[in-house]
Amino acid sequence: MTISWSKVQLQRLIELNATAEQLDMSFTDTASRNRAFQDAEYELVKRGKQKLEELRKVKHRPGLLDLEDQLARVLRQHGFVQVVTPAIISKSALAKMTISDEHPLFSQVFWLDNKRCLRPMLAPNLYTLWKDLIRLWEKPIRIFEIGTCYRKESQGAQHLNEFTMLNVTELGTPVEERHSRLEEMAQWIMEAAEIKDYGLLSESSVVYGDTIDVMKGEVELGSGAMGPHFMDEKWGIFDSWVGIGFGLERLLMIREGTQNVQSIARSLTYLDGVRLNIK
Image 1 (cartoon, rainbow, N blue to C red):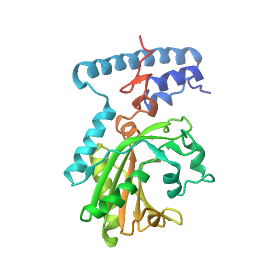
Image 2 (cartoon, rainbow, N blue to C red):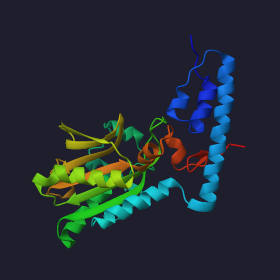
Image 3 (cartoon, one colour):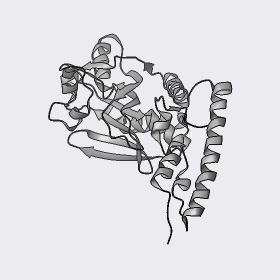
Image 4 (cartoon, rainbow, N blue to C red):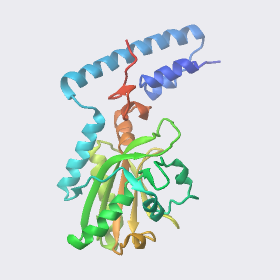
């Protein structure tokens, strides 16, 4: 018969970014478990202090910001224009994305009043920009945004209420090149994020049409879609297109091998992956 970490011990190890192997350890008795916990806590605190010193003396910025820079630099090199749009959007913009009062996502939105909310996704603003840029630029129109989105998610190991999204879009992609273009975009992002051995999962649905999900094991890191799409007409878009979105905290979580996405997100409790209540 074996025993695992106590609830309090497990929570503390998760806070300190223990590895999956450490979290899955088992023991024959309480005494050996407690000794192992003390040793693991000591080493994890020591590692955290070292990482904070590296941040203070060498890096000078958290990994999330470095990842943003890496991704933006690669996309600009491929001819994509970076844009910055408002975090507050209208209820009517969400309705154009089919997120009406009856939609499951509607209850996850942070509403400011009965007409405005914090954006749960970047797509509505990028659609709006497409509508204007199609009059001003030749196709294909290549734009991307890296920005904060907000959803009332369950606070699990892979979910956040406030998270960073990357959306890469190309309007005017030839229909026959859409799948290969999405695969190419995914490759750029995964190489820039230094993540190997990922997989692509192609699916088709009535609501979202043809999609390509970027997977690392069981974790979804990104999701791509393509048009023409039934929502396009609401935005005055009639050309073929591709777009792919990634959650940066998940990318960083996979790259760093952490089990706790909270630690590398925007936080007052953690700094660059390190829990600050260490001695």
